[in-house]
Length: 193
View 1 (cartoon, one colour):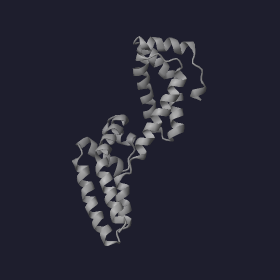
View 2 (cartoon, rainbow, N blue to C red):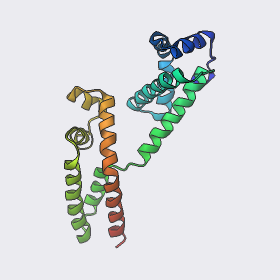
View 3 (tube, rainbow, N blue to C red):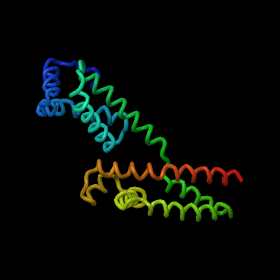
């Protein structure tokens, strides 16, 4: 387990070299700890793609912050960084309820006249919102939520990195968030009648 590892003299030397701008020193630390960081993130997230993202973020932070600050306990620093990155990721995910799920729920309750009307209006509004996204975001969003492809599958089809796919998805979701809140509010209001 990462937090039980002992910070050794070689880590101190490599961190010192990294602060001096030595990329090879950073690469050595990356090779030494990448598997531990990934495993720790995976234990928390149970998703290999998300664990890869957290691993990348942890080492990006190490390169940036480690070049500016002295780190006295590298395994401890990495463990805290994993913990913070996974918590931020889980908080972002818990705030998002996919609009397609909301529309599916409305579709299941279409036997009520008001639900049928609301479903049609929300479907039109949803389609309009999706079409208003920038092209790359729109394509990726549709591939993810309409075609149910994973970020890796999308990246492979579009010949871009999975990280780029996740960035575009994040931007699309952020743009849709305000509209989603309005849709949920309308659903709650109509659902009470």
